[in-house]
Each structure stands twice: as structure tokens, then as C-alpha cells.
Image 1 (cartoon, rainbow, N blue to C red):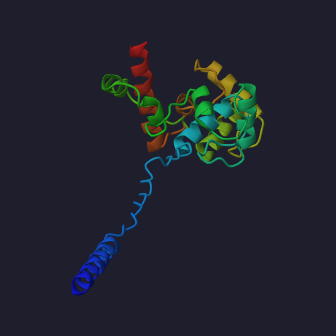
Image 2 (image 1 turned 180 degrees about the horizontal axis):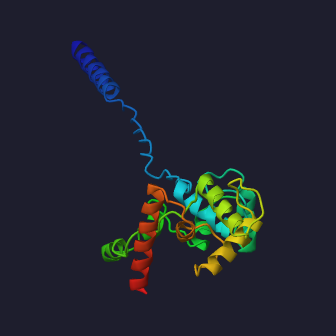
Image 3 (image 1 turned 135 degrees about the horizontal axis):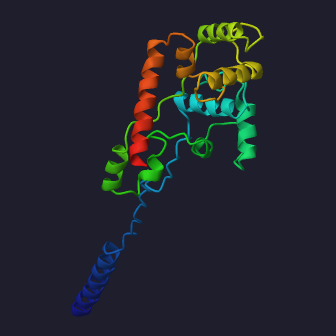
Length: 228
């Protein structure tokens, strides 16, 4: 009797031990690794909008004046010149937006600054960049006569009986025609424009800034003559 009870007790003890061991080995749920956020390296960089310099606007306005599309002054500020720009763009098959954009400046033969042409020169080699820097002086801004100089020239033309308009320092078609006659009579380049040679022939003094511009233009013309 005693041996049977001992055997039964031993069986119960073994069963309890086995059940305890199975409970202690229960699996722990796996932790799902967190996904790292993207570094943002694929973000697109916006290309800065093209903006012409004041000198480029001034040169563009002078081209419009020469083509008789604009009757204002070349000030380097858009002002009321946008309609003239649109007319030029339309006549040359360009996008009509009234701005001196890259395509319009290039059509006018106006050089772009280094920052404006950076996107075009990235693919060029170092040798080509060095050669472009050695091409010579940059094209200077166009010659601009002051209101006082225009008035003085109008008086000279009146005295020569070539002009009968107002002495107001303003440009006009009548004044341009008179200047052209004066230039032809004095063996100057007959363009009708008010340039340094015409003012000096008429005895009208140039400003220091104008003298600097004339010297820069001469250097630019000489450099291009040698390259051709």
C-alpha cells in the first residue's frame, strides 16, 4: 500500500515539473524593426529664375531704340519698354513675354554674364573655360548722351539750319533725320544716333564717364577685329 502511494506521488511530481517547464519556455513575440525615414536626398532643387542685369536691360533698350520700336531712353529699368520688347519678340519668332529673357538677349547679340551662362558651361572642359576668358574685354554699355548734350546739339543743328524743332533735350524722328544730315556733311558715320564722335564734332564736351565708355568701346572693337 505504501509503495503504491509513493509511486503515484512520484508520477504527479514528474507531471507538475514537466508542466512548469513548458510554461517557462513560452515564446516572446518578435519585435518588428522600424523603417528609417528617407534622407530626403531625392528632393529636386529648383533652378533660379533668369534675371537680366541693369546693363543688359540698358543694352536691350538701346537695340529697341535703334530699331525704332522704342522712343524712350535706355535707363536699365523696364519702365514702359515692355510693349517694345513684345514687338521685338513677335517680329523675331520668340516667346512674347515682354521681358529681356535669355533668348531675347542672345537674339539681340547681348552677351550674358557668367552667372547667367553657368548652366550652359557646366559640360565644357577647363581648357574651353580658360579660352573664353582670354577672348578679350567685355562689351561695354552703349553710349548715352545727357539731356543737356542733346539740347546743345539741337542748338548746333538749328544754327546750321538743319533742325527746326524744339530745343528740349528730347529725341525725335525729326532730330534723328537732322543729325544724319549733319553727320553726312561732316563725313561721320551717318546713323542718326547721338554718339561721341558727333558730339565732339559739334564742340560738345563729353563727361568723364562717357570718355571711359568710349575707351572701353575702342578696346572691345580692337579685340574683336584681331580675332576676326
